[in-house]
Amino acid sequence: MTQRSRLRIAMMLESDGPGGAEMMVFRLSEELRRREHVVVPVGPANGIGWLGDLFREVGVTPESFRIRRALDPGCVRGLVQLFRDNGIDAVHSHEFTMAVYGAAASRLLGLPHVITMHGGFKACTALRRRIALRWAIRNSDHTVMVSRATQRQFATDLGLDETRFGVVPNGVPLNIGTQEKVRAEFGVRAGECVLLAVGTLERHKGHRVLLEALLHLERERQKVPWRLIIAGGRGGDQHDMLVEFAEEAGLQDRVHIVTNRNDIPDLLALADIFVMPSIIEGLPMALLEAMIARKPIIASATAGIPEAIASGREGLLVHPGDVGSLAGALQGLLTDPPRRAALGEAAGRRAHSEFTVQVMADRYETLYTGAPPVQDADVEAPIVFGRCAPKRSTLVAARMLGSLL
Image (cartoon, rainbow, N blue to C red; front, side):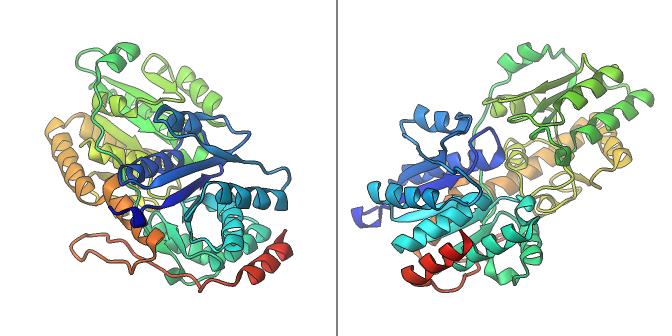
């Protein structure tokens, strides 16, 4: 890579706790740094610091933004100064808040701006937010979704044509964990089948549905011993309810609900079956990590998940929220180790060809540099690009910003 091709990229996200978007930002940043780009992570000044700590551990000092009220021109001014001080060449904003503020600050400096929406469907719940996001999209070079389903959803919610959005699937590293430590931590005994679910403890992740399905199996006197670990990210408002349900169902000795874990590869190494019972999803990082780890998967047929898994080939898909179908899929894999192995191998082959962090970084690098995108006709779910409207002048962008803020 020549000196001329190196970029200084501001990587901006409105949250910094354990989660899929946060891990994607970190992993993409690390891959870009391996390619000799300079990445400047930008996160909330009043966050919990989890993502910032990951960056500091690898020798990167994060920057911060501060929003003092719902619409804060001062935050835009602060970002403009931050970009100038760090000699930023391109800005990559993730999720709604940074999409809007990043677009405003980038346009005031004439910098290339890329937006990635990870599936935050709440971004479009209010008219004011829809207006702001449409403004940000018009004033950005590329707006990217992580799945075709997310692309369709945002196009519908915002009243825009799907071609205004690109699709770049998330990518995950080839991390291989070790199970000895976590096996001892959770007291897993010989012969027990370990089920793993990964996702924040919020209703749309469907953890309650999973517990109900396991209770159904117990009432049917399912004979294969199992143990469930729910790695709940930064937690969520369903935590107490899930703990209470497990206790009332008499499952508390076999259900472990944990948060703020940095050892997902180790938990995957321990797991015999990965379960994602989500009601709503984009293209979740945790699912791709399980595929890379060659784990048999049971997941909901919702949003972007069927784009990664063909039911019966790379995993088993069930109707979202359907306790009976989830229980049936669990019963089938608990009692059929050869089927588990076959599904896991198929998932691994698909993930290694399409969903690695290297493939994801190739695609984003193309967007940062503005080169014409290239599609790979051999990839089953290739990258899809959409161009937004041409850049507006700095003066027009400033005036539009003023009308919003």
